[in-house]
Length: 555
Image 1 (cartoon, rainbow, N blue to C red):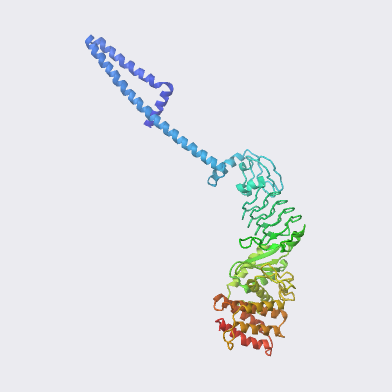
Image 2 (image 1 turned 135 degrees about the vertical axis):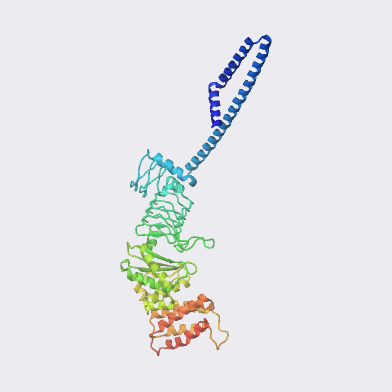
């Protein structure tokens, strides 16, 4: 307080000339005392007195000057300190303000408070329905969009949108705000962004990446999506009218019946993302010299509308898949579940795709399916077999899944040629109960041919008197094909199990292969059960299956 007081006095004195006035008063008082001494003492004494008085004046003056100087010095120090603090504070404030204006996330709180206060006196669109509203070239400084519905709202060439109170929507992100203002998103990454309802009409989105993004209800009319990555992009009710999709990568994209594809310009697409080894994966049309004619692309893509995609990414259990899907179909007949494809995705991964009735809750169906599947997967094989109980629908579907996991190709109805889409396409089966019917996905001759190919890859037995896996499976194959008691469907199923054994026979001592072999042998025994005892296949099975099991170390 003393320093502060002194500083204040010094500053006040300096401002009003107080230091000079104070010193003059001191000099006058001292001079008066000296004069009285001269009158009361003689001239000599007066001289001494004057000297003393002068000395006193000098001494006091020096003392007061010292005190004043000290006070001034203290004040200067305080003032300098205050100025320094003020400068630092001002600089810090400017730095934070610049960071907030530049939308630095560290100062987002400051920015939000400032914009919220400013928006109080601005235009207020709080909770307004701005669906399909056009704000082209409008200025939005201090505008409040908190809680507003911004479906297909146009922001092209708007001004000062960064100074608007946007709320929790796509406008709060700098990249997306610039996108809707400029319409320039070429070669940008928007992976996994929530772009629901965004308006990108006429936007340049060539080579952009929207992997896992949600573009549902968006306006993409006449947008350029050439070579865009649309893997697992959600496009429910998205308007793609007149958009360009040539060269786009559409692996597992989520279009629905509500997606508008009228007038889409597309010469070709890719069904997978590119890799260094395969920069043009699964091009459609297949012939690189061909392109889609006008309107062909929409017709090509139409069959996969409203599909339920059940993706299994590890340790696929074919029997659990079969049982779980059968249960789902029976529990939800209104969904009209209809398997249209199975696709192998890497090692031990599979996608089961089923058509559904319009309006089906695919999210609920998927959740119910996987809850059931995971419970079934945890059961032992013997427990699962009790659930099957010779249900041919389950056995057939299980065989399909097992085949899909092993085959790099897939068969189509009534066609023995191989397709280049990885998986099994079984479109044409009317429903899950029809899987075991006359609409078999692969004819008997093709399956038998595949078994022969697989067997030829196995080594020959070193001892002619001791047949190996190759020889035993060849005998079993012949017995199945020649059987007069098995239906065509049962023969197909049995040969698929022989094919599984042939594949497992490449590494018969590997635990996973032994498990495959054990499952295949169990399935074959189930197929042979019920055949007449006099059937040659029963005799062959009783002889060959134990020998095969022994070679796999299961005996």
